[in-house]
Image (cartoon, rainbow, N blue to C red; front, top):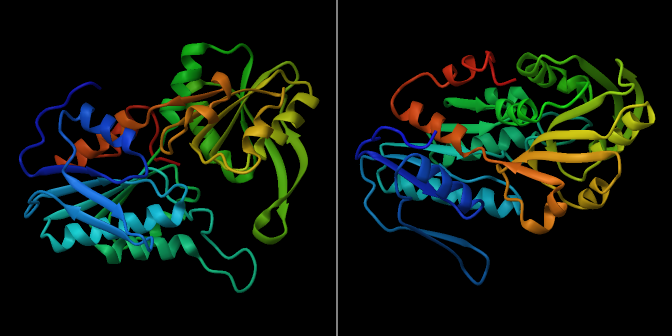
Length: 328
């Protein structure tokens, strides 16, 4: 997707500071210039936004991932939304490729918040009329919004990488029962068998992981281990388990490359052949491990979704074309 038809004078695309390269790429695909906005941080760490052009009566699209530093980028998004609402925008769509706090979607112990719902309420209260995100950690987060919420998936983008590289004796591996539906999407596109890893989490926040069994044949196979988020890199331990069970080196296919804490050290494991991610979150060169971490662009998907929303066309049609009825 290189160019699109004109989106009209009522269309404006803006980008926050979380992922400016992604914003520029989306603008290039849509053949538009990013809107003029000045975002700064005061000495006391408060965020200030100044829109430097009239947006009265315009349809506004704001690209801002709520990635690390999550609280700063989330607050920046909220302040931008408020600024556009007060400047009399006609409609405001928040494009949030990575939705922070998504893993806090339910109470796992007593006296905990449901922070994913809180973030949905904050975005709505700040002025968003619509939200677009990619591969939410839990599908029920869509229901946390009382405004339209479009849930996209990067599965076709990630799967296309493996389709082009034609891995020998590949199998799709779900890291747990909760990701089985996501794994199904890969099997639908790549026509590969699926293997399920059974694990149990315990402790506060589920930080302690115990691997119970591998359901399916991985002997002599090349596993494609899938997930929505890689944060501290504990999934590398599952790659080790697959190799111990007789598999070849493991390829990881994960949408959101949070990559914090010991993640890069864990990814150095000989069991991990490569990690394929998207640029929903920026991945600086020092985190790419000399090419072991490969970044695919989510910009064409987001640009297509923005175009279809603005032209009042079906967004789900994008995935029906890939034989995916729903994002997850």
